[in-house]
Length: 100
Image (cartoon, rainbow, N blue to C red; front, side, top):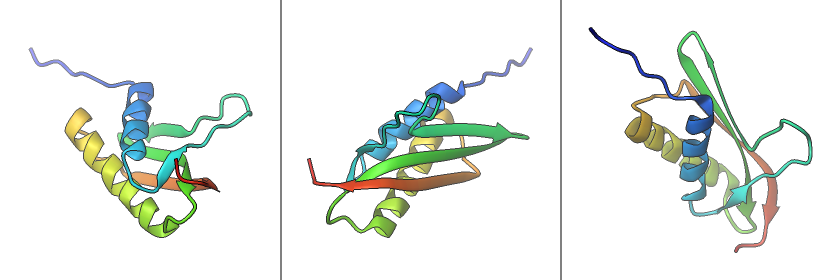
């Protein structure tokens, strides 16, 4: 009898957040005072998983380059940790701040 396992969107969001924080030029995830607005959102429709990350970059970081590296790292992380290939990884830079 074959079983099927699933991973919650909350766990996938944590994986994506961990992956984004590993990228040089990412200062952190964006915080929001608005209720139910999170720095990482994972949604799925018809088996296609989409990830949206809101990040803060460092002052001198190239935003396009950081965005590409975050996309690549999140894809790689989700492939390795969850055996999942997201349909889309969208990176939104909400702020730019001094390096840590």
